[in-house]
Length: 150
Image 1 (cartoon, rainbow, N blue to C red):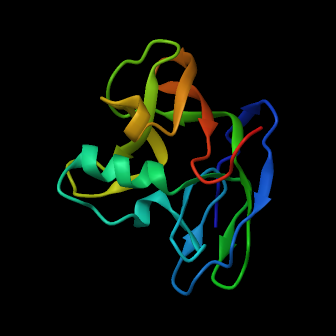
Image 2 (cartoon, rainbow, N blue to C red; image 1 turned 90 degrees about the horizontal axis):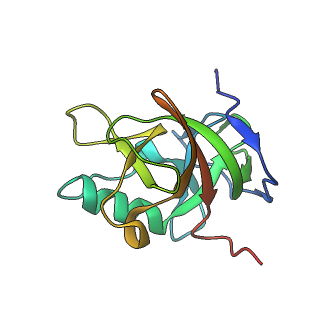
């Protein structure tokens, strides 16, 4: 099981996730969502809903953070709810301050767990904002939708 160490700067404000359910694997560096029962899962397991914008909006409301370690069924993982992380950007060319959300997996009706794309509406779709761009990699300041920051 391989994961990507993509944390680059800032306090991570870590939380311990709920128990990972059967058949679910979370890798270090994955965008982690949480269902209404408190169970974590990678963004790639989010159910596609109509189009990318609708799916991004659903994912944003469930956004817990970025996994800091690998985990499988029955385990809990440490999840960063804040901080700056590097991600590949699959579409759009955001300026610093530009909003990003979960990225689509090619032409399939699915999103990926470890890449971002620009979003049309920051308030309803964004999981973070770009703080640095370097080619096809962007540094994103994430903001959990589930864990409040003081």
